[in-house]
Length: 153
Image 1 (cartoon, rainbow, N blue to C red):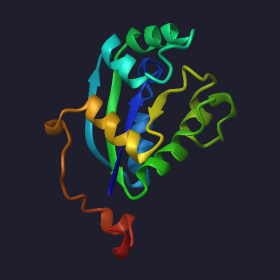
Image 2: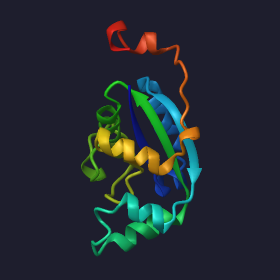
Image 3: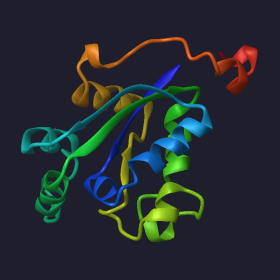
Image 4: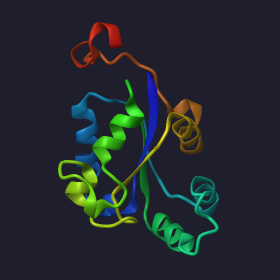
């Protein structure tokens, strides 16, 4: 099964959306294998947003992401990267489809409630960036027999 990373951003934490975001992932049948609250520092942010670090708007992203804690979540499931991205909605939240997290709760590109890994390769790197090995848990999710067909498990 694939794993992916979700960060509930400072705006999602401040607005009390942690439970709502997690509810949507859990109701979909995704397995939570790691979760923690943490403050981000400039070192982890420069690594995480290395593709944006030379952009003029990067300083604003860094200030925003360091303002309040985030919730880091590792989720597992079949095609979980793609599934989580659909549930999250597109980055430009005011154009996100209603019913998605961003479509229902956000209006901004920056303040868009959550980050979700965009590929399996990036998910693997991001999970290692935000979680130690002993913070990711393997366990049987008994409801999988009601979430996936026998040939998908």
